[in-house]
Image (cartoon, rainbow, N blue to C red; front, side):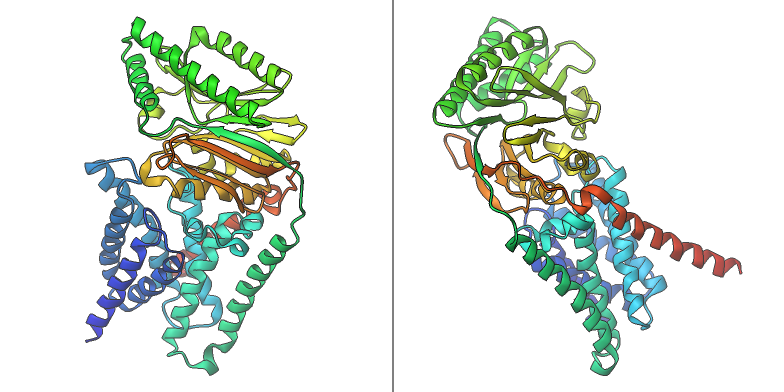
Length: 491
């Protein structure tokens, strides 16, 4: 019966894990899944961790189908790697904290989970995909912790809950034995939630600026023509018809830009690589944009795909920011290429995200996948940015997920953000992660996001000052555990 009970906790934890990250994110599931998985890991034979790894792989495979843009063995390999990284904290807990001890033993699991997640995110090509913190999007007071510790503090709190719950479980929920430990965790969680609530309640009210974000309407004729032109350029099959299509697509986007300027937009933002232009024609296109911005007294952030057919790296994925005076204030090449085709084709940028002064505050423009790397985006917080204008491009399965992930960068760095996405979800938030607007390009015929966002809203955060200090402390904690274990064996 005991083994059946252990299997039941494993299966329940695995089922909840499916809802923990990916296509279906349910915030409570992210808190509950580790509770049952950790209980199984403590009670099963050591070899049972292999079964745990298999269950985690199956859960990750189910929840990330379509989210991870791979198939076959490639998809299976990535899922297996995710599950392996997730299994490490359970192993560390089994080795160092499985026997009931003081409440401090509950820190082994969250410290290891946070350290493994941080190191994985820092040194793998997919960044912070899969982090538990993202499942808590929309819980405003908890999200504010990201302004202090980054997302790592949220991961820590969630997994610490699992460890405290199992500590109490191992002690048969004897209140006389667990009350101090439970009260300690409750006090920390309460402090985080109250502090986050106060941060939201005391947020100052500011004047706003009208921002219009333009993307191609999904499924429309221009969207299909865009894909055909892009494919022809990469195949070096450029004929008169392709060049006519490219020119027509540029014209459509300039017409839409002019319409939004006349409707009162003060800043206009194009989604990632919205306009295709050959390298030899880039200067003329930018000159046209400068004239439009100057004539209509509008700031314009262009998402450009600058193409050089036949080159080793034929794609420059750029954000070019033009002032209302027609001045090119910044030109930035995307730093982080998505693994796969983009990484093969794209000329990466320098990693330095420009921050420029405008009447609406200091503006920075990282591009899409850049936002999945908090250490890269943190430079805009250090520079005192007030507003992030983010061109992006996604696909249907991550319409809501990727926008939610990106919004944590605004909280971390204390900046407002407008992110406009081709083929996906677009949104605008204030520096506290509160949404001003949201747009799903799959459910609109116009694909225009209009939002009033606060001006000069940047205020800096503890995270933008201290960076990933909390996460590095967790890494140090794991290192201490390992060194002590090795010393004990050798001694």
